[in-house]
Length: 156
Image (tube, rainbow, N blue to C red; front, side):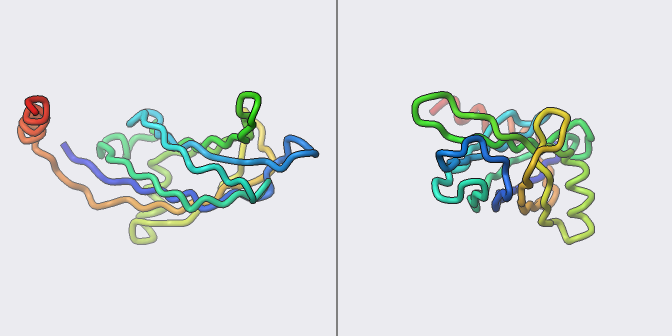
């Protein structure tokens, strides 16, 4: 089985649509890879940036090479505004294919910095998310070795 590491750093968002006029938005983001590992990672809440939050949050994933090369594997970044007394409010999301990210990064030595527009449903919304990412080298993992290491952990 061949795998790659994928590292994404959510840098910031800018010019997000303000949800309320009275209070400053406290924005956080969740990162997930749909079609691959369903693990969701969450940034800390930016309490001071308002509609221009900054995080510099890094998330790492180990991905099967087949998932990286498949157009159906999507990177999804969802933005939420934290609210104290009610449920957090959805601001919008960014989604793109990992295959497209991989192709862009291949021309830049395995890493790149992108700014993508925030969307709500199928319509473009106000604002953009800036992030950097890097794909690691392809590593081959022997299935038997992987099974032995998992079995060893279960005996502890």
